Length: 303
Image (cartoon, rainbow, N blue to C red):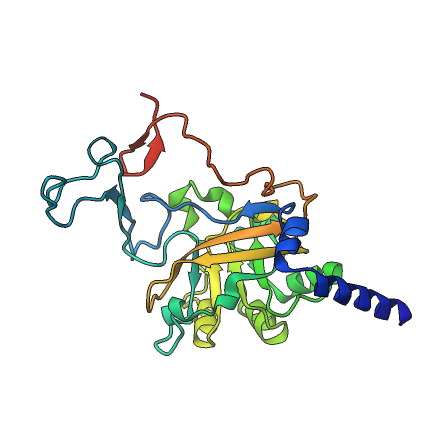
């Protein structure tokens, strides 16, 4: 007991003398950062009922005499800048964050989510070996308890990501959305939310489960919980001990969110880069000029 009290007193003393900038310098600057987000574009997998996005050059919405005419494209050569217009047919696209409003007319929308979503403990439950044997395998309560037997109880308010390695099929658009694909069972979702009181869970496919009525997603949304879909790179983060930074677009009253998930891993983790390795300013120069491909996506293109 004396040891516990001593550790607590020391921790409190350090915290009292250390502001968040110091914590950033001493801890977060050395951490390894791993992106769990797919970049979305016009040809990714999407539920057929929604359809794919279109990328195209932004054109002037009004006449600007002596500068540009309405309907004309902005270019580097004539105007010194460009911009891109995105025609996105659904907010259920790519790596995403689903709020309850997606299914429930009384549910919170994406703009209702509190700022406290920003950073949370990250739990990764690995079912990928079972998915190799059975592509339709769904994470179970037993899988969760096996994780806890190894790492301890799931922290309250954590985000629980289910690793299936389905993200490796992302480029196979035809197969990605077809059944069978891995999911999360309703019992597992109830256990995570009602027993462990997590913030939300995430999975690599674009649906929660493969039941005829999507019973897991129905239960989540009608009980006012969120979920992450279409995440990637869960094979490159630790099962326990990391944090998750959560960012998402905030359209007023949005029924979905284009999300960015970043795992913050210990400094000695084998994947990712630290702030020291990738400071972000200035950003690296492209090897070739940016040109639009056949789908309107800007890419460095060798002349």
